[in-house]
Image (tube, rainbow, N blue to C red; front, side, top):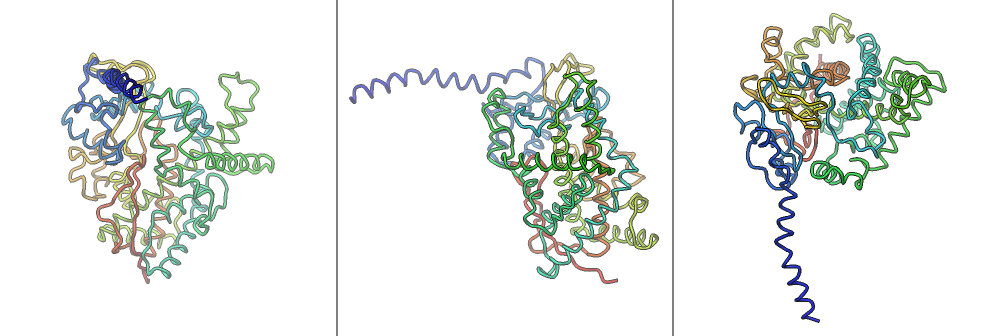
Length: 510
């Protein structure tokens, strides 16, 4: 018996070198891709992990890995990197970035994000590309016109009143100290629910809110999401054996059912409002029910629901986190906070203590503060595009072939001292009327840029301005013993998310 075991062991050992060589070849097979094109790499890629070893192993936030690459390449306008086994074209030069995002956009129309056909909620304007993206974008854009945004201000005001009540209750209970990121997340969930979908969620007073709890799951790092992304970057063909989504099936089912019911209730009750659901209903008539369309151009009922889903989840997480970062910086810079408050109170006093659309437009210094917050803490630390038809880089013999992934390091650009002197300093004056036109083009892009920039950019700005104005006119915001200085980020998150933001609120007595 022992003889058989040892013989089998010897047999296996004889194949070990071949196995090791096979694994090595598999994990490094594509690592000559950029050298064949004449594109430099920042350093030699690690087998299997490429240039993102520290991110995949959760030793560093991905934005730190991008920052390492950005600094390493000095004055190189671009380099080639490998995200595990996937080649990606990393662009540092603003002029080339402008071509990709704007001037030569027709060569880079798609984001190249993971779009699993098994997940019904992935067929949305963020993840789809080509003509289907263009068609749906055109259908949804009218939601965010100036006139419709004016209509939404009163609805946002109702949510901001609930936010102030919540702050007051927390002040009484906890002597003013509170973790604001979750609270602001509840506020923005209520805003997007009411303004975009006509839903009175009252999340801020309901700790068991399913919309809030399932929504948070979308952005929380998980082993499930980490494994799916790793497979996507290593061997995309294996995705068909993976779960359909980053999110648990219960989360997908909840949002699918909720938005289907909302849309059908509106149709059956013949309710009309100037919001996202109304535009989705019109898109449904034009793209799903239209008998004149051929099968190629038709959309499905689930495509309509998928776009409701992405506008909902994208509408609360990024905005709430940005407001939290803004309050954090104002707490650390009392002189800037006082100047913002003086502007807010001055404009409110001229309008009987109320804030309407014109007042929000007049809050120029607050606008500068928000812009500087988004420079320091862009919601997405990088942008992605994919080459949709072969593109030759100007003044080179380098041709990027169809399917090549593009990576633009937004946060690294925002912290480059060539474009933003003293980048670690919180300085709203960068965005004054005097200075804003001096900014280098294609170096500031917290909402993206070009035809695929954030569709709800103006809505987000109004939501932030209104909430911050109401808070700062009634409370002074201060750091407390639980405030993290500097901020610590959630490693594994694909958005710019802090672990927590604790601040102290002190009522202002007029």
